[in-house]
Image 1 (cartoon, each protein chain N blue to C red):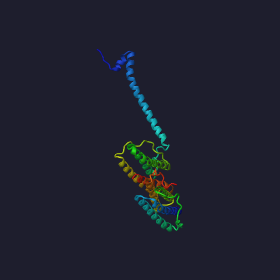
Image 2 (cartoon, rainbow over the protein chains, first blue to last red):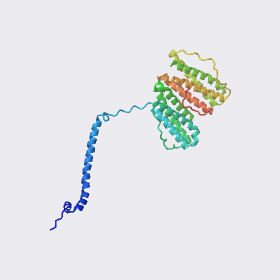
Image 3 (cartoon, helix red, strand yellow):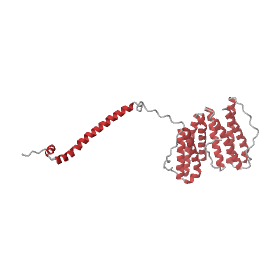
Length: 185
Length: 140
């Protein structure tokens, strides 16, 4: 009578070579499984230990410090940069406007540089957005004039409430923006 | 504050005198209307300042009877040049008042600075002076 065995049987009955072959098939899976679990358990334990060890350093104590409130001049700076970008786009779309618009853009660049120095914040270095303004040169100029008028109101408001050491700065910027609106008539 | 307001008053009075002189050298109707309007604004501001300084009990020197102009006004070009200088000077006087004023006084100073900067640009455009604007109106 023939008895058919499973792999174990085959292993038992096999010669050393065959047992080794099967052993090679089975053992890595088992061993790998064990090693992996041990490794994972080790990491988890170590991780848990690490977390516990770190907890005393204050890194995870309480809430992170709240960010300081933005400088009141931030809006004035943002508008100066937006105006620079708007002028650059207008000149790109209508190069014939360069003679008229470039000096005005230069004023805003000067403002932005001084404002960022006063606020203590570096200017962003990214390229201006690529969207070209719609409409012809006259419409472009009209839009810039409106932007100057709106920005003038912001700077004027900032001037009215500014501390003494910033009153001249904001007042000058408000006056410059008003003069720009005049120049764009 | 009183010192800066007194200086602004002096600048406004000088502007009134200057416009009276240069106005006659402007030929176009547009230019003349502009000069008359400017003079009226400076007169109104002068009156406000006199009242304010009086309320502050600050003494003010009387306006000079005449001024020595920085250059002779002989034609439209020199008339416009003087108008520009006058508005630049008024702007400087009012900008100096900003740090030492608050509330309504600062609002007055700011409005005056803005007005002077706008008029200076208007005169520069009429005189085809470029650039027509400056980065820091009122800065000496």
